Image (cartoon, rainbow, N blue to C red):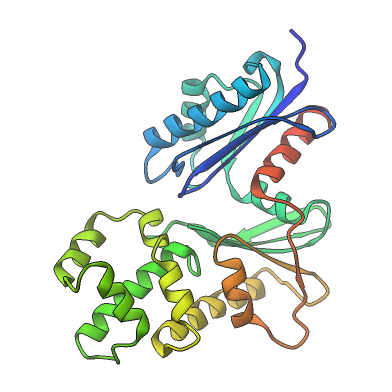
Length: 285
């Protein structure tokens, strides 16, 4: 059977997407599924990715035997044994399974040099220069993922409880958070005890929408922007390279990072585009 397609998968904490393309990059099938973080829920990630791939295969009237190469960029994919296990479970042929940073950087920059602040449910900052790619952050919400939607949402909950304790004013952000739980702080604590990154991330819009008028929300956004600047400094970024800010928090945080000389650039494509680009490079060079 002729192997004439490439498979790309973008798996994140909020959902996953799969696509098949031909050698010219034309999309012939797509699919989507639920959360696909390999660390927080490996079994769930496998199931959701399988569903997304199956949808793409059905749309293209294809199966894995048609795939010349594939690239799966997945949040939380840290260990080779995880990748091997997923490869075996899903019957992935001629596919690379790895963390999501390479595909996100490739998607955002295409063939350009530059820096990427990827600010979705999780987060990291990366730089590509002269064919060398480096990244910082992205160690998961428990230890890292600063400036991500999950981090911002969780910070909003913490600030709300400080307002309840009268450690800071009860501003619009805290009022909106409390209203979501009908003023029941015990319910907020119960939520936090079981919440996953995507659950926290769903609260981020409360913070971003209040930030212009609420000092507590503004402080969270400022802290997030400061972390991104620290990450760029650690990577050796300078103003000769564009900065692409992607993900749900990318647009919201850009004004908080604006400074003289900062050169922002729009993304060349999505993380799924990056996965397909890397799959095509691996299959056909």
